[in-house]
Image: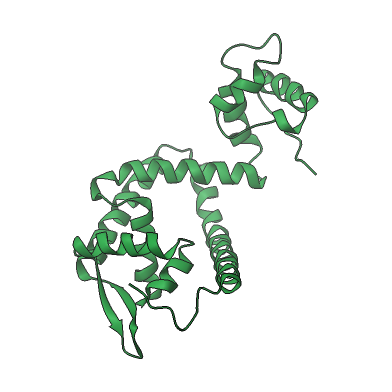
Length: 224
């Protein structure tokens, strides 16, 4: 059943959301102000700023819904990505390095599976990272046809610089929040950590199911 959009604060947001809910779920789009603008135009008597007002109001007053949580996470990721652009790592590269740092060396096929990426794309990514000295590749001891990928000391240092930069950005942002908001963020961190682990577990299980369904682990298949 589609979620009905709700709000608790701004009068303009209340009016706009009431109109959107009457129009139907297909028009109740909350991904961003530009997409909201398309739907809000169908509601008469609202100011041009209504899409942004609705979006901000949903973020502040509807935070318990999965959609609002997903949007907040996306905004955080986008902001932190901009802060770490000087490292030169793409999101895919940073994710792969973090995977190798956390889980240790693994076969290229396993890295592709855990990152929910195709093997050709992962092979190209690992090649670029290896050229930059961030990862190393070697033949698997038990199977010379398989490739084991590991993070190098340079890769670990690059990843640590990225984390420190993100930490400083978050510290600056937290300093700008009221004390109660900082307390709420701190209280939410353990639960968010458990949520992240659950999402990673579910994603890995889904990726394993897809791989098994397509026979990607054929023992006769070699890795590049």
